[in-house]
Length: 288
Image (cartoon, rainbow, N blue to C red):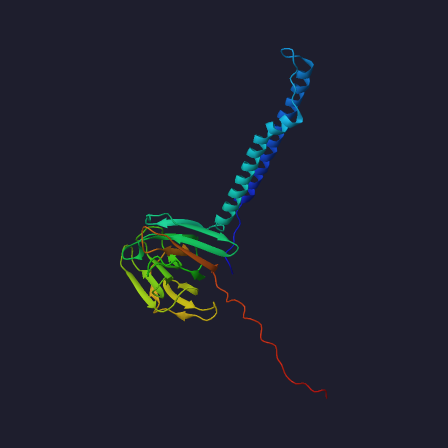
């Protein structure tokens, strides 16, 4: 059920690091051999009445800077490879800053765990400003468990969204959990129009959220476990293109800060998690 994908970035980076390491090592060995030949020849030819001698000790110190440089380069290659692997999104996903937030957001994925950091003023009124990790899809369900929302403002919020385009005034529907105002179903039914809101107060992350589309009818749900769902307000009719953008949204409700939010169980289809096994049965048995 988790969205998965592959990326070749870390693998290619590792191969490049290996090739660079091999070339650099070969060059060091070549210099060493030429230096040893020069040393041998210099012993046969006096220089100003004395011989030029290079001992093992002096060679050890001569090669030390090269070894230090090699170690630093390999360390940087490995560090960059780890960073790229952690930051890569699944195949087909992209990260977009909607409405040019004051601080650029980001999105990363690793082993089923998502982090989406978003700034921006809000997803509201006639134009939006937030960060959106999304993909183009014809799927009619998006579900996620929002595990945390950074409390940059009471209306800092993160959740799942269907959106017509990346234009700031585009039509959309989302289900978000806020830092201090519960869970909300929000939408914009016309390009550049005002937004609507249905809200359930008193809820905090972690919480499951789900958005379902049936033609142009959008219905929002929340739940505690991904199995039992409660509708949020009434369904809304929104004329939206198909395929549409679907993904994870995050805004700090403050254009000078970032709201770093965490997600798991992100999927563009829905199968309820398997229920836990039944408890063992205890009783008294008698042989007949």
